[in-house]
Image (cartoon, rainbow, N blue to C red; front, top):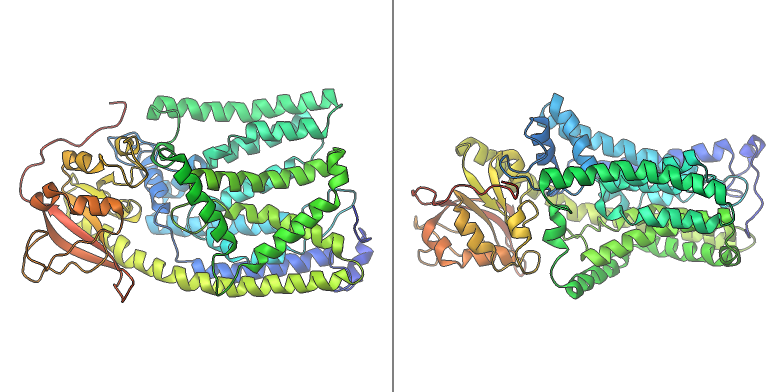
Amino acid sequence: MHEAPRSTSSGASGASLLVAPFTASPLHRVVFLAVACFSFALLWSDYSGYWLDDAFITFRYAKHLAMGLGPVFNSAERVEGYTSFLWMLFAALPLAVSSVATSLASYKAFALLVSLWMLFRVVRFPSPGPGETTRVFVVVLACQPIFILNCGDGMETPLLMLLMLETALALQRAPTTRNGGLCGALVAAMVWTRPEALPFLAAAPALIAVAYRGSGRSVRGWMSGFVLAAGVPIAGQEIFRVLYYGALWPNTFYAKATGDLLARLSRGGVDFGRFFFANPWSPPAALWVMSVLALIATWRVRAQLVAKHASTLCWFGALWLMIVFRVSFDIWSGSDTMGRHRFLAPLIVPLAILADEGARMLWRGRARFVVAAAFVLAIGFNVSGHTVHVATTRPYAEGLERAHVALGGWLRESQPRDALLAIADAGAVPFFSELETVDLWGLNDATIARLPGEYGERPGMVDYVMQRDPDLIVLWNQRPFLDASGGDATSGTQGKLLGGQALDHAIATDARFRARYRFVREFVFREERTNFPGYYLDVFERRATPRTTPPATGPDS
């Protein structure tokens, strides 16, 4: 394995951390794990009040499930607009027995515990060969800004990362029926967490079949355990989806993964490039260091990989499989529109383990100074990058509280319970307002999701919304909507609508909207500045006329 000798006995615990940092002694593991956990918890606390608006979509489904309405966005419509079935089920548990505030606090605590458990599993991740090691790059992982950010935004990402890590560990076990069942159950949990994990149903068995060729009986036992443990829950979820929602795929698939494939691939490629060059003033150097070390580790064992050495192939194959899984999905899907690299963040965990293996191989002679310098460089740029990420996310967190949460509360207090709302930012506002909502993006609306066109730019969306005749429409405006004259969207130059997205602009310029709706109130997410557009949630209410059509119902009605 081209690695430096290391002790696996407790007698090595007196060795200097600077001389033999990769030793498997209990002391070394405790020290590096403690440093990693403390660093992560300290940096993660900067996101204790941070939520992505999209997280409240899942929470709304969970809230309705806890209330006995079922996993629905609107009570009369069966649409699967959440991205994670398993996270939605978990989120429903505290909402069934406690308040919203307590439930939100429990989600943060759960994310922190899952993240710390990941660090514990990483520091003890086994070697591809005999013996054990201490994964010192767990410290680099613990202060990686994109990793920390995506462990604190309220989404399912920490749960997915943990399941990916546990699946990689399960693939290191001997091919037995029991271990095949364990791996199958973990893959099923991954699919329940993110549907795009379905390819693992083929990828994991293929890796075992290639690595353990010639071990027919044991491989067949592994396969039987895997198929049973993975197939039953995945088939059960699909049957539930078809019977309950009337669709083969989640509604998010129809909303996002349709339209021009080349346009999606282009957006995904751009996002992948930004992942490695996101902050020119504070480059993500740790990602560069880890990538180089991961490639060095793989190159050093190329002969064993070509020869299909079982333990080596399973070790490297499992970790690279996780990385390829996330990269391919990010590019194919067109990336996460929130710009926080949510789809790519999970690859950082296997990349850190591969990097640690590369560093361990180089830890000899003068190369150890290069490894030490790279280690320090990665941590330094991680901490610097974290401050940049906090500086950009803190205004988002404050704006979400000031605009979306406040708007949701105002709607809950000021509007009748049967009012129909139409809004693009369909997370915190619908969650806190508790109003039936038309999601202009189509994530939670089966009709908009299936209209021709691109995500967020579907020509038939405005006609559909006007047909639904909502009581209130909320648009993202890029400048303040001044209403000093007591007018509305049609009077003078005081009320100027500059839609923040194409869908906002399409509604704002529609003659039916301008004739039927009048400006009511404005909530400020971000003030307009010179050469930088503002972010204003402008509320428009339908004039005092009865709704022309009843609310639409779901696809099975």
